[in-house]
Length: 212
Image (cartoon, rainbow, N blue to C red; front, side, top):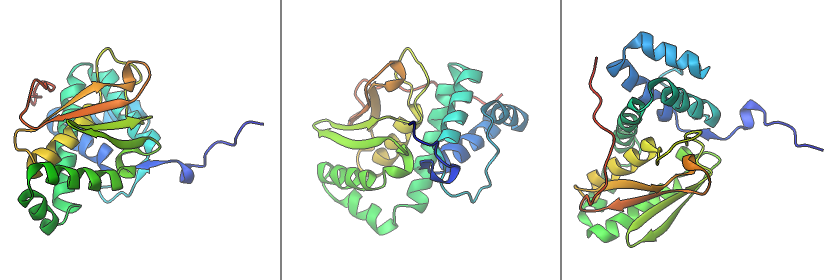
């Protein structure tokens, strides 16, 4: 006998910024009418600004609709959404005293403290997926079953997650930090892996998005 489908209330959820910050980026760079069109394509209602955790299927649908509609330009838009989400976390989720402590610590130790905090709260950005720190030299994050992955891609496509990680670590630990996704479930199978380069390295990111 097959398992009964999940009730909407039982579906794994992701923090609302996966959608709210994306909407803000679309409003700023594409305009309200284009944003509404993309949300309609996704089949997802625009959530209120004070939304709690949202069904991961809705978050995936919005990101995927953006990829389908905007093509390569979606990479920069999702990158900006991830950076804005990182800013929100810094302003509202990590206490100021904790940020001061992380900044005061030697970088290697500060990175471990921040990575531990991210692991503890990983359920807010991976939903039904699984997050782990795979190694520290270099610091590498792994997400199995990433619910925000693209349905298919020819190169690593989890720009939103990479941007969130980069904003947090470049603000609190390594000012020149760059995050590189070195493997991606969007390309077939396996986990999404993100390597953090303290001095920038050769990591590259989506081209900047310019308002029309």
